[in-house]
Image 1: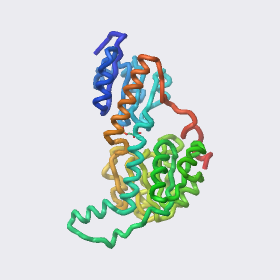
Image 2: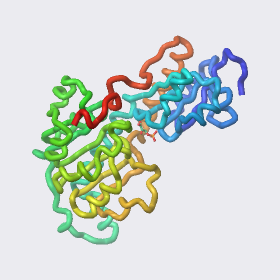
Image 3: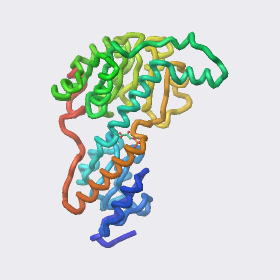
Length: 327
Ligand SMILES: O=C(O)C(=O)COP(=O)(O)O
């Protein structure tokens, strides 16, 4: 533990890339250590990911804290009211995970569409059974993207290669992004009605909470495939599971859940027509490396140059207006 105020105590709270760690450790003005409750007392900065929750109780442990950098694009694990109250700067790394998350959305969409996981399970059980696996082409189908931000717009760009028609619902995104991605701007109701595939790319805010529940499920085409790689809170899981069991929705491929880890008693585990992955969106070596290096840079710039980039909370993003007002 360092009490010399010229030296900044930087605590790494979750998985962090080695090269980025060495970069931070090179700086003689930083003492860089792994997080422990004891060390948190003198922490000047915390470098976190999405599992390290920043609550009032957590902040009480670090009275000297000046900076939090989260190596994530989501920020719902941070109580931004509390950090603002305590004048703690919070930064995130929104670009670093975007490619990985968009690629996972496509992996899930494609695996769901051609029932890759179920066919694999049958093969492993010694069967050679093609009948249940008659599929559909993506070409000519309609992809609905909910949230055309950094990740959603990449998902839209990939859709061009498959010859799909892309719709997007995002009340806050600029027209230029719709044009660049060739996504047609539609209302929430229209996207639910018209899409063959619905992919969610929204942050967890009060506006997006349960935005896909029983009443929205009423609108969708029963052949639809739902993909969620954003935040579990956007989808009411019990309602989705009921719709999957009742065949009101063909299939769902989910990487994120209302409560993580997903509990064994989740109704989703009763559904055959799901693919579930354990929050792997940002889980690639490249994304880890980019996010960690960016975080290291942010920490250095903050303490050495008083510079702040990508600070939270965001203005003009989901969360600034009631969702209901916009649909
Ligand atoms: O970037 C994000 O928003 C994430 O959800 C990353 O999640 P993780 O920190 O890898 O559990």
